[in-house]
Amino acid sequence: MNSPLQILQQYFGYNNFRLEQANAVENVISKKDTFVLMPTGGGKSLCYQVPALVLEGTAIVISPLIALMKDQVDALRVNGISASYINSSMSSFEQNETLKQLKNGQLKLLYVAPEKLSADNGAFLKLLNDVNISLFAVDEAHCVSHWGHDFRPDYLFLNGLKKQFPEIPIIALTASADEITRKDIIKQLNLQNPLVLVSSFNRVNIKYFVQPKQSVLKNIIHYLNEHPDDSGIIYCLSRKGTEEMSNNLRENGINSAFYHAGISSVERAKVQEDFLKDKTRIMVATIAFGMGIDKSNVRFVMHADLPKNIESYYQETGRAGRDGLPSEAILFYSNADVIKLKRFAMIEGNEEQSELMLRKLKQMSDFAEMQKCRRQYLMEYFGEKHNGNCNSCDYCLSDFETFDATVDAQKLLSAVYRLKERYGKTMIIDFLRGSQSVKITDYMRSLPTYGVGKNQEKNYWQNLITQLLIKGILAESN
Image (tube, rainbow, N blue to C red; front, side, top):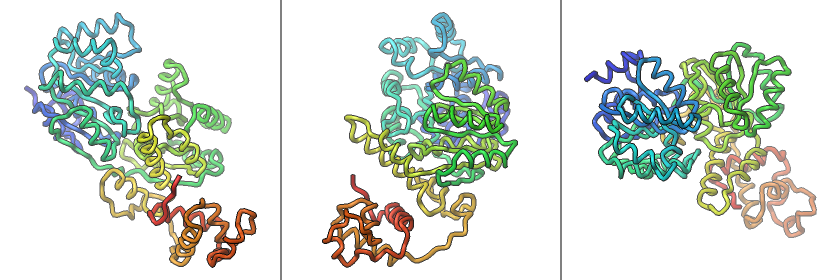
């Protein structure tokens, strides 16, 4: 039997394992369950591809992404590995031919979509009883968790795997999951005493910038003209937004294309291929684009709209700089986006899920509004310590003038208290600044705090409220 390292060198052309790959590979070969949390570009797929070639039988890889399946299978075949996939893009004849190969033990890896497992009352899983299976790999494992940022109901069918195949190891892999999601993945997949491997979330080659969402198109065009040879991705919230942005860029002489789930699969494949082969310089896309995109020379990722949560933001920005060279993540932020996303976050009849989505959105807006090292915030979000001062985010690269806001914070808190915690930000600020608005009652005018903040602009008080909210000194109620 070839050693994992020999297989790595022979089939994949690498001399050494990186990050936690070696530990994951050894554990799976020992037929033990494994949970791998590894940032995008960290080489997650090798954690199950190498054991698949060491162990007897066929590895079943569950992956939600048809485009990624095809890319991975093509790459494996080029390297002389017998691999195939089954998904909805194939005819029933093609599917049956692949199943024949599976039954005859001719495949080392078979990629299947999660829908395939749940279809026809689990007919595919019954068929697997007669197959020599080496391991199950669950890719994008956060999709199994209600707490994850991309929950997919078909994944819930996977919780029966361990009961049906108790002896076969399961390796679950994801690029972004907070603590609550990690625990839930392990529970949902019934992993037995899994080895949990978490690689560092620090993408040292990416600089993080947050800019106010003003004159976005003008700013983007200016940036692209300053970086004429760089390839990048611009994320927009809506399909319409991607088309408008891409058309505007083209009108300004910038080679760009758009990608979203509303265009045909043939068109999507072409757009993706053109980008991968550097025929298209800028990809403007919704979040439908990018999972499994292995393009190493993406120099920047921009968010023209606010992502829904930190996990999505982290995963999307991680598509920049996979070659390890300096890259940038630029987010255009406005509170209007937060208000818009709050509406999307409400899931009717599911209060718990809605609450979670709103909390994650709040953490995303805190990231954009806070005054501290962006990298430190990101890493602490994923449970990793960082001392700040990264020298590669807009906060650490700026010369901020700090000042003591204790007295103003006291005035603000006093106003909230005197107004019996009943009013929103606007009213509090109007009250502090001594507004003559009809909403300010005679009783309010008689309070000692009325007008004590007239020496500061409205914006100053808005920013102070924001910072006190982020620090947990103030809290908002619905």
